[in-house]
Image (cartoon, rainbow, N blue to C red; front, side):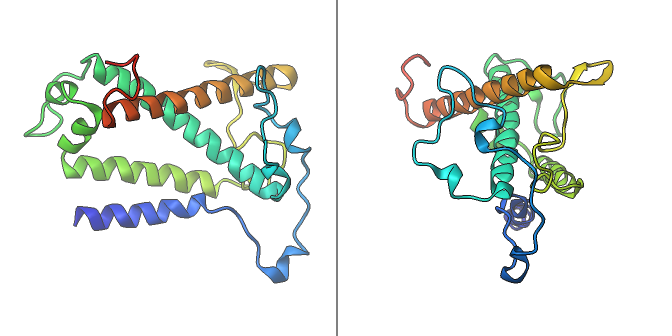
Length: 210
């Protein structure tokens, strides 16, 4: 039962990650997206700069490039949360009390992340996966859709603010700096999570990790 529900949720949320394509009869009439070239998008920073050695960005539509950017942002944000969670779990920090009638938070904190997930009750896993599905659905329903929004707003429709309690939106050079920082941190977090995962699956694959 659990596997069937998980599969259904994954299929539903996976539809949000299908690169946009228009029917053949409507492609010619589709509105032109107002955006500069991919080399003008945030995320091109020293020391690497613009990185597309095989010229892939020149073979896709502007809609697809915005879809790729939104996917990168989503994965970056998930990786940053996962990296922090992995470190917290590895340090043995945990909430007090019970996760369920049979599982204590303390018991999960003593396990490796994959083992901690396996030890979670099935109801808890469903809640987590369901919450992710809700977030994906909400993101995809925001109008204009990020694949149609052009260079503004920054997909997926979340603009950085000047401060937690400051409603003013960043603009110009400040906005670009904030976007570059988020992408840089997110890319590093994705690399870090790949390292953590490799270290737990293949012992000795990451020498600096015990």
